[in-house]
Image 1 (cartoon, helix red, strand yellow):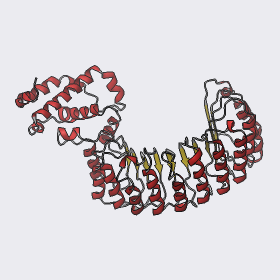
Image 2 (cartoon, rainbow, N blue to C red):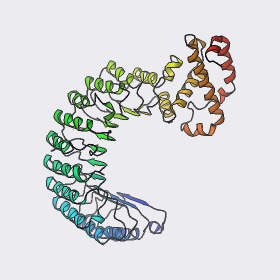
Image 3 (cartoon, rainbow, N blue to C red):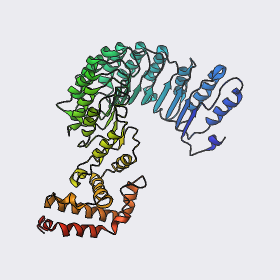
Image 4 (spheres, rainbow, N blue to C red):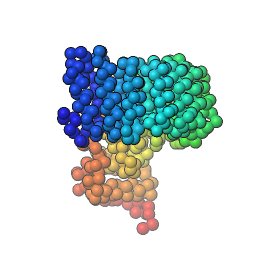
Length: 491
């Protein structure tokens, strides 16, 4: 009754919360009936319905009534709904539904077969206005025949789907080729495409997939998930060639659990050597067989200033020597795009490697080194170092000049100020540093509220209360010991 009367409730997720068995059937069905009276719920999810047993058919009848009568409902999700009639109930509800169509339908672990996919796609072909923009059918039991019916609907209806999820089914190379050919011509608005955990795909399926997009630039979905499909060297090479032909990089590429080795990764990255700005912004290589040469090749790519990579995940790969780790971490120092790096199991657990990363994020050997440190990296695996976590949190500020200024102030003017750091500095550079410091103090003094908002963690570099009283004294101390800097500017 509380849920039925709550007009502010927009999302309802029932995760293993209801035991729909014979003993509690009356209460459970009454609960679903009451929930269905709330016309303000926009997102409904039922996860883990393992106890449906004898009354699951009647329970889905209540859920279909909820879909049919709630005009504001936007997304509907069922996970582990194992009744054979789940697709029939859904189609019946959508046919009688009033108002706008659902934006997303999710049926995961629901035993959907080829005939069920055919029934659903046939209904959408006859009623294209009631088809959702996103559909996820992960971990079901349909194969190439179901993929054929999906491609048939895509060819007829055009740019409807923005997301298609087909993980963990029985799809093979033929089914993937059929869908890819349909998407190439008719689904240019597709943003996310997931085909992971279809173990039959392999290299033939990946090659067929990329060949379908070979003559059409910018048609590959922005988010591509092809993890655990037994991809090999030929598939990686073909995928790299297809992505390198794009006019702009895709947003994410997930290649987890594919047994990718150094040779496969080198074949993939070789395609981007001439134009590293086209490499995917997010590259997930978790749990593969990468070693020394794989890490070296991707480190060389990170050293290129044109590299577009923003998130790199290489967790749970083969251990590598410290020298390789040092080379990889140092490659991040002058990279201005990488925001997240996860290579925590590649030999980076010891203090030596943490010190190495600390020198990359904030090199304190000189003011110039601090200024040229990495101010972009905001996440590094499961980093346990408090100091590194502090710098990574500060790097989240979009104003990189402000970040560099605070690091200079903190390490060279507050924490351990030493005049010998300035002895070999050119006059013009020293004037720039003094201007930097002056602006830093002025910014902290005038925009205190803005600084506190940018500093989301207590005790970080923005706490300069003790510095404000000594800013003029520090500046005059430098001027007194280095009078030559007065000639660094015309004025």
